[in-house]
Length: 227
Image 1 (spheres, rainbow, N blue to C red):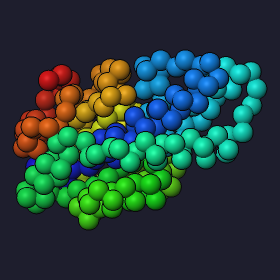
Image 2 (image 1 turned 120 degrees about the horizontal axis):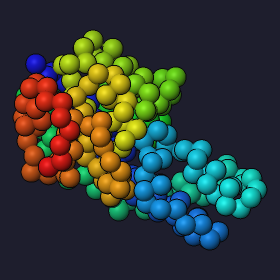
Image 3 (image 1 turned 90 degrees about the vertical axis):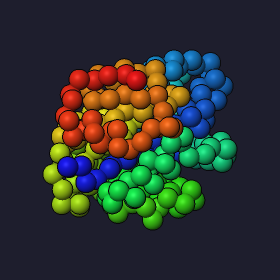
Image 4 (image 1 turned 60 degrees about the vertical axis):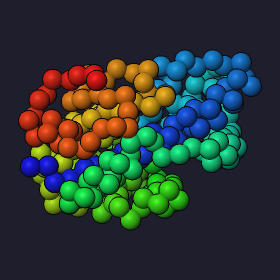
């Protein structure tokens, strides 16, 4: 029986991915660099500050950039854009279903703890989660299984008693490597990617009951499908 629901944070609970991309896109545009949505989507999920994002610009310019200064500028713009974002559709309902059903809730995020906790607190969801595993808690972030394994260890729960919700290919790979049933919910950025490893792919959580995901997980239908 499923006893726990483990959620990613960025792009799944709150659409931080679009402001993240827009902040980088503005910088790239200044330097005449065009990065496709599909190429960018492939970077999502492994780190809150992927080194490849800087490397793309450096290869284009043919020289090193001041990464620290660039990061400070970009993060300031990202936070400005993030103020416009709301909790992703269906997330509050999914969490409410889990609480009502007595399921344990956890977060597995490749971002830093301060980032995740601050935003969860701001949107009023922090107290819903029993366990939160973040980048500084593990040796390797997604697509490595470490974050999910840490959460499962904290909950003292085998992988077949939990389901994961992810928005990125790296996140899905991490969840599957840890042995979890995983539902992919692509956002505006990651929808450009295929999700062959996901057990289920849905366009949105809006209008979906947690019970249907639990039923699918307990049936262990391993055939990926898009709905």
